[in-house]
Image (cartoon, rainbow, N blue to C red; front, side):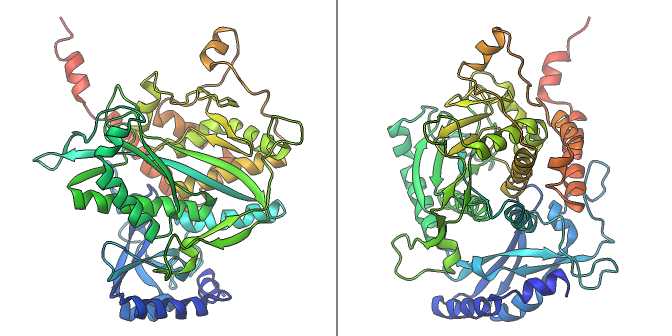
Length: 488
């Protein structure tokens, strides 16, 4: 059987398809968004009336391959990744991800896995390697098989900004003042964040804490950590929810990394740990009847955390140290994934705002790219709010795998401010400080490149090289302000 056929006929899937039909009928669902995620993390797909659920679940829907690259053209007017002569992908819904949209209960969404067209001459019905979400599922399985059931669990800290909308539809500044942890500024956005939390819980996100950060209108609302694929799906869902709440309040939900200089950017720190075992638990989040499949409300808990220190030790356990070593070794290439836009590097250049620019690690040391944020986990800081979480998790799994299999020693943790340590003579590798430099590092790193297999790497590099070239071939206000009357 082809990859597509095996996916459709996977054990237990037929029963899940029937369960979804029962949910559709019980909830009165009329319309379904069939969605997947592009190379930049954008949510794309098709909408289909719910009457056709069974046929789409069996046969899928078709969409041009270029949808995985936002159907975008480069500066030479060539389509990125796939031209108009290319075939169409087949999107197959994953029924376990079906859930009702709380802001319009006539509509539901379901994530999909993408495959090559059935009529392709080469590898018909094969896994579409430019499907970042499908890739992460495969990478998770490969990692668990290679490391006796070890699996990544992580949580993320999705900072973003709520901006006022001006008369022209553009931004008119942040909704609040840039006062970090200020409850009064948090209170000013109460109608917004309470609606975000309401919608999030209805779609399975276990919201745990939040605060006002130190940029205009900047909030961080956190949800419970879980296995990598579900965390990536939940971050994607969270972004959709914020966009909807922004429409309801005539605001802009801004996930741009650095819309303002002189204040903090929006990061998306990843808190990482490796586990063996554990059990699946459904968290109903106060709901007696779940508005969708239980998978959306399920979290993996318990088991053995391999990042915990050994008895009497402060350092992470041997597996955790190896993983830190793997990430440190591959940080330059990882930066191309975690800081994936031209704007990302404004975050690194605007000094004094705690953005990580050095490849080192320490305990609670925010001047390093990695810090031990609590016993049993470490925080990967070189990732921002525009990250594609599926690509990031896949790349981190590859770095972990290299760290473990190569037994990489990360060295001693740095407990000094990294700048003071460097003044004292410590040699520390600096992260790439532009998108162009980071892409060059990715090109040279076979381990991290393997996280973007085959067409995924080609599409990603075409998209991002073009983004960098468009920036470099643009005259900005800074150019004219600096050089217009530079001479004589």
